[in-house]
Every structure is written in C-alpha cells, then in structure tokens.
Length: 50
Length: 258
Image (cartoon, each protein chain N blue to C red):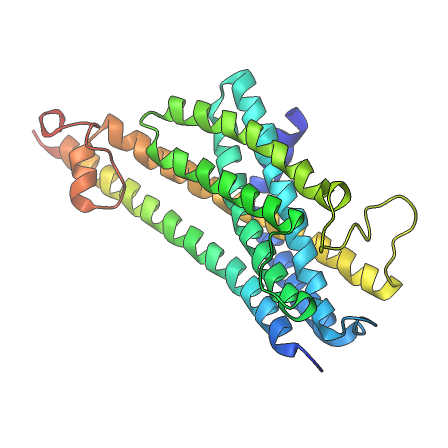
C-alpha cells in the first residue's frame, strides 16, 4: 500500500475535526447554561431579601 | 422558506438530535472501514484515491451549509426575524469547518498526485476565497455592536458571499485546472466504478446527516447563548462580567442598575 500515510492522516483529521467541533459546542453550551443558572440563582436571592 | 424552517424544527427536536448523533457515528465508522479496507484502490492513483470518500462529501456539505446560510440570510432580510439570523450563523460556522476540511484533505491528496501541497489553481484559489469570505462573516458577527445591526450586516454578506459558490463549482469548467472535473454530477453517466460510487453515495448521506446533527446542536447552543446574553442585558451585566461566564460588552448595564 503506497501513500497510506496521507490517507490515514486525512481520515484522522476528518474524524478529529468533527469530534473537536462537537466538543467545542458542548463546552459553549455548558458555559451558557452555567451563566443562566448563576443569574437565576441571583434573581432568586434578590427576591428573598426584604 | 417555510419548508426550511419546518425541516429545522424537526431536526432540532431532542429525539431527532439523538438519532442523528448515533447515525452520524455509525455512518462515519462504516465510511472509514469501507473506504479504507473494502473498496479497491484506484487503477491510476492507487490508495491515495481513498481520500475521495471524505474529501468530496466534505466539499458537498460545505456547499450545503453555505447554501443554507444564503437562504436564511435572504429570509432574514425579507422578514427581519432573528431566528433566521441564528440559522445563518450556525450554518456558516459549520460550513467553515467543512471548508477547512475540504482544503486540508485536498492538500493531502495533491501532495502525492500533483507533487505539491498547494498551487494557485482556479478551484483551490476560489475555495480559499470562499473560506476567507465566511471567516470574514463570522468575524463581523463578533464586532457588530447591536444584535439587529449584526444580523443585517451578516445577512448581506451571507447573500453576497454565496456568489463564490457557483464560481468554485464551475471553476474547473471555465478555466484550465489541475483539479479534475465533475465525476458524478455531470451530463451522462458517472465515470466511476459502481463500488466506488456506492461508497461515495453512502459517505454523502453520512456527511449530510452529520451536518444535520451539528446544525441541531449548534442551534441549541445559539438559543442558550442568546438567552444568556438577553438575561444579562435585562438583569445584571456587571454580575456577568464578574463571574466571567459570558462576553458582555462594557456598554451593557452598570452597577447602578444591579
């Protein structure tokens, strides 16, 4: 098998690219959710104050 | 336009997202296994032609993604509804990912076949321009100061930038090019062996499902981010800056409002 290195690199980069982007989206979702939770908590605390 | 929105609603449901995620994973495993070990090597190029099963589907999804950006941008300019802006931005981001993959995979293929990683060939150059246009589109979204202005500016680029897509596609016909011409989408029957064509078609379906899956996830993230920034401007921007979980411009809110 000739040129196997190029083929293996290409398939690896494709799979890594897709997985990496999915991971990046998961991180962004987690960050936004944490932010919304923090604000909701603050709003709840604010309501409890006399 | 209504069809596109209905399709995105179906694709965006949690169950559809899960099914597409599993289908994408299974499809990628099968495409990799068949592309690497089952399909025979090309008669002229040998094993390096196995890159066909990832390079061409990646290019197809790039066109699909930029096409959706074009439609959603046009819909935004017509209706002014922010959900179209969200769809356009999501699709452009995924399109950029697949554009980078297309260029990198093409480069890996070009090195053993053409003897060079890169050449200023019409197909390669117009694809690089396409990548720059959509990187510009995403960059512009970071600098615009109000959501409405950001949506309007990026919708204009989303429509104008799409002009490069047919130029990329027909570049191998209009100009003398190192890149080979159409093999499957051409007048007459495809000039490719049946087993290779079947694998390529399967890869097309897999990559399209992957696009649908990433689109669903990206739209969900976009909705969450919009909700978080909307909450920030309404409740407390300084709090958001202190906890450092969102990018809030200094102009939004102040301590006196908290």
